[in-house]
Amino acid sequence: MTVQADKHLLALWTEAGKHAVLSELMPSLIAVLREITSIDELYLFAFNGADEWRLSGGWRDEYVPEIFTQRPITEASALETIQRWARATAQLSEQSDATHRAALRILLGSDYDGRISVLMPLRRDTGMLGIAVLVCESACTSSQCEQLIALAEPLLACIENDQQLTHIQRLRVRAEADRQSLLGRLGLRSISENIVGADGGLKQVMHRVNQVAPSPAGVLILGETGAGKEVIARAIHERSARHNGPFLRVNCGALPPELIDSELFGHEKGSFTGALASRRGWFERAGGGTLFLDEVGELPPAAQVRLLRVLQDGIIQKVGSEHDVQVDVRVIAATHRDLPKMVQEGSFREDLWYRLAVFPIILPTLNERLDDIEDLAKHFIQRAAMRMGVPVPPLSAADVRNLKRYSWPGNIRELGSVLERAVILGHGEYLDLEMALGAPSPKLKSPNKSEAADLVNSVSDPVDESLEAVIAAHIKYVLTDTKGRVDGPFGAAKRLGINVSTLRAKLRKLGIDANAFRSSSRD
Image (cartoon, rainbow, N blue to C red; front, side, top):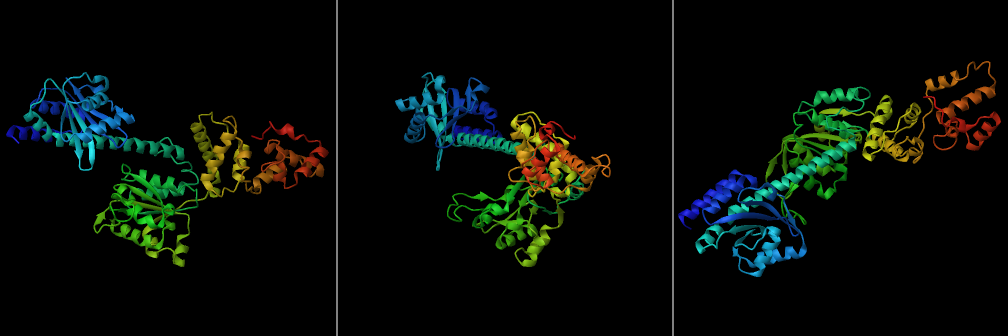
């Protein structure tokens, strides 16, 4: 290679190293190429797999932004024509045969006008990665062709840089979509939005969250299924110094035992059957951020040992590797299991328990924060209406009382599901809470003391009233509360603890029309 050729090669490598974005690189790239030959136009195409060629960048007299439209070529016959040309061309092809011209017509489309062109395949040992198309004023000499072939390597680097940037952009779009999906699932407009109940039933929990969030300490969140452990874990992350880093959630109970090490710590290529490439585990991917280990109590003993080492030393070892990898991750664990009991039974390591429970946070059940139900209900109703594009139906006081009487075995998660179902059943016009809670049948609680007092006070003077008058007043009270519904899980018969036919007989005897209560309400 001549000194001049070396100069061009060095210049192009220098520019390729300076600019990863093709639009920034193109002027310098054209300047180098024009020192070699009389080039008018340049197009770089990237091969994105077996089913697509894509225009990455182009130059026509000057940089034209609209050229960078990432035009894809996906037609099967067109792909086959390009692939056939690529296989038949070793290093460089001038406009000399029908296959060459056919490939140009496909790559350039309406921009191809039959002028002299050079096609340069850009390939690695693994296969074809791209094509450079140079449109020239005149045919290249053998010396010029030799210099152009030498520039294939830096041109290939430009293609690879562009593919990496495109891949990163796709990951960003996907991450943003995942973030928006999560916000929708949590019913938030932003991840830092206030948590419902922060000043009510979760006041003590949020106090502990604010205490531990700025520190690097590990946190163990204990609470029943559906109590909102992930929401609290994210609140800790967002209030920590790592809030700009990733927050990744792993459901330990969903990991197959034989793949736990690979999922958490990663693996090297060929370390086991099916390991076709190296893979980073959750700990590496959460570097600089927070890893939320949900249902950590489900980890088998062998995995508990390896997790303990990571928590103690911050070191992992990939499956199939002999090298240690240092990781910088804050671990927040959560479980609905009774870990102290599991420690006593020997199914959970005591030393791991101490390591995880540096700062435990216990979440109350929904039944322990009944005062939050109204705010939570409004939150879930608004979220459901927003997702379905319907008006927000009103939440009546009777609805709130019925929600408070339910036992909520599924906690907040069940509340959200029930209210979304109620919005769907009511078509956004009203809340069909009775039907929403009808499957499965709700577990109603007995009326509390204040409700019993309201019932007594509903009769002006119980002492002076006859038994039938008191019974009639009681039934009317319940019918008003149930909006005239007699049967069903929220019907008056269920509330009164009597058979539906018995209640209907009573209504006839007392002259009470249940239909008259359908539009009435004690709200």
